[in-house]
Length: 220
Image 1 (cartoon, rainbow, N blue to C red):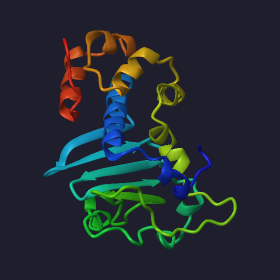
Image 2: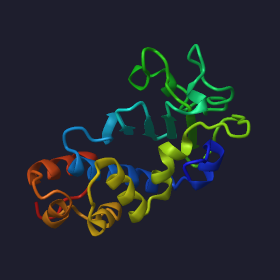
Image 3: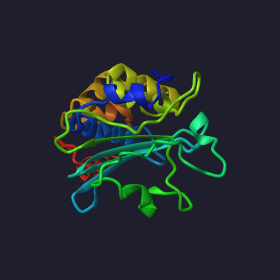
Image 4: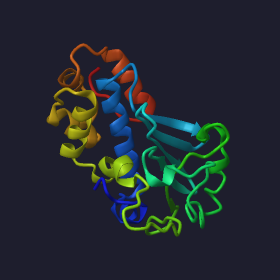
């Protein structure tokens, strides 16, 4: 999946509600594995009625997913991709073409920009009520990449094994599969789940973050 571009990614993306749940799960999991500097985050009510899921690996790769009543906007920047090498900074032709009116203002949002530029090598969207994800008419030559697989492969897969391997590779430590599966399933956070992932983690902090992002909490 790492070799796929946005055209390969679009049919693999889950329904918006499923994608939102996965974003919450990744954020909660990463909070417990790396409380100081997690890659993933989820901001409920980032704008009134709008949620924002983000990933930033600290090495130049990042993404954002905006969950708006008008639909979902997914974008990402892979700094080693061919699409990131435009100089001066520019989007590949077609990247933002056909972006629906209800979502078209987000590339101009200062919080989603870097030095006044919307950093994106990948962009896709799903309008409210639409039956499928869409992307602009970006054209790739043989061997060219936008980094879609690297950025979104795990999110598109969504399986316990894919998420666990991703976490283990980044954090360089074993990860309890049963705990990961519980979080991905949306099961209420429990003392056992926290201890299985990071015994030294503060239970109250974990519960507070879970509630903040909309994940239910059981006995903490």
